Length: 267
Image 1: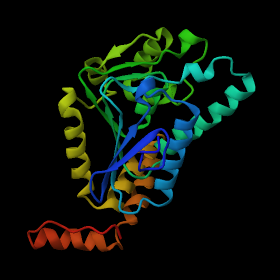
Image 2 (image 1 turned 180 degrees about the vertical axis):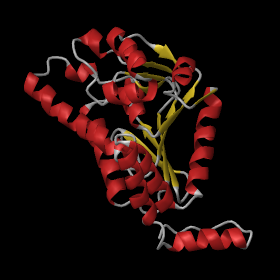
Image 3 (image 1 turned 90 degrees about the vertical axis):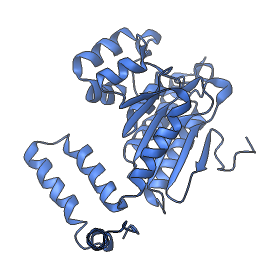
Image 4 (image 1 turned 90 degrees about the horizontal axis):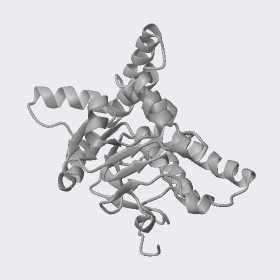
């Protein structure tokens, strides 16, 4: 798509302001299905962001159009694929999952439609999710002779618990946005027309906070949950101490005392 200003074949990158960007999975003719190129594009975008976020403070990840967030792996592309080619492709998807999860900038998923298979796994990599009331989710891999390999067995189980995750993954059955909300996968559900505005309102609220604080808190929550409480507390203090010598900490306290909004610089 030469008209894509972001130089990504399968993503559109839309800066909303200095600190917030919308990333759209952009293969609307294929229900935004995940093909090799989209895997490469997501790796490049999120790894580049990790290396240098510049002024970016929050990302909203959504799908182009109003039907699908991402319909999953592109099975047309996979038809007749050799075992070797399949494995090579999957290495890209594995790296994509790590790039999404390890992104220091918060990522809000705005699930605007079907999030099936790999699409559901991409959603699971986001920090939290808002969904349109028309959105549908499913991890259908076992119905195709494979299993979730883009983090689905890990992210879904952490979000909804072991027993619910087993039921959903072993049956492959679809579930609604309201079910996803009740089970803890989705934070809030909105009519489709209100989904992106709600996600952007939350993104701009995050972006008003001190960026080093936000990144360190994100890291502390995510990594801490994988540790014992004692080790998690030690990790938290390591993350906290990074804030003490920053300009932003001094500005935050000063602004509070001067009864004005802080002007955080990220240093």
